[in-house]
Length: 271
Image 1 (tube, helix red, strand yellow):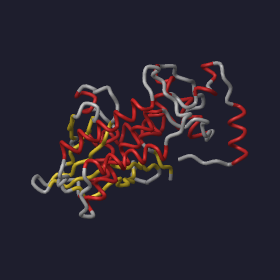
Image 2 (cartoon, helix red, strand yellow):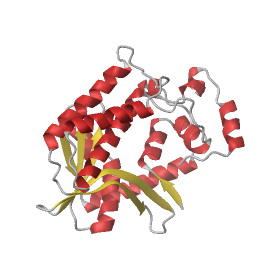
Image 3 (tube, one colour):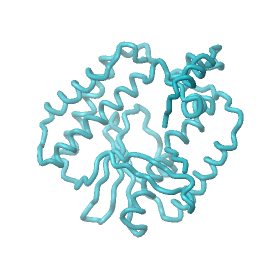
Image 4 (cartoon, rainbow, N blue to C red):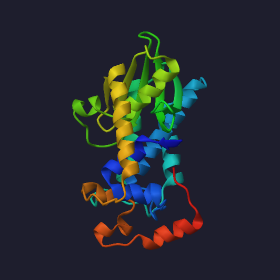
């Protein structure tokens, strides 16, 4: 049995060499995250805390929610975190997060949409024999009792707002909807919802069962391609500036050999 995730699949598509560094060589990068990742995780953690409190019949004020965000930011922030955009400071990113929290809180209070699970783990077979499984975590799962639909909610802190076509072809939440249907029934409608916090917008999409079966086949085809790959070339793109492996990437005149040897000796494992 081999477990894949959307992140693992998209890493291979983004850059085969990055995939090799992370999942085959199991290299732990010296600097593991950028300021964008730190912002995204802190906002996710804050909204997770907020809905957990609501499920416990506690209703934090907006100020209390912002205080929690600030504490989580300080707890996990490190000065060496990469800031690619030279016209931005760590405080600028922190302030963006505060704005995200204020806008989201104002728009969605009193948070009574019948959230049933937070950070829900999804694990299901991609093939009949169970050789390959897909695992993921849903930011928030809602059961809309008015429509009897299940809603997969995902928070995005990116500045760029894609066109609707991107959402109609999104793989990650569509895969999660397969897992939801396996739990609650193939006949259930699953709505995919993205919260683009920088734009204070909610985007929705959904898939038919036929589309989901096709997605399973496409995902298996990608996995077969990955497992048949013997050479892992680097893909140079604008994403390289945010890559945690740039300092060992041969495409940028660097060498990964020492890091590979060190991680092999330590027997590190990365899922």
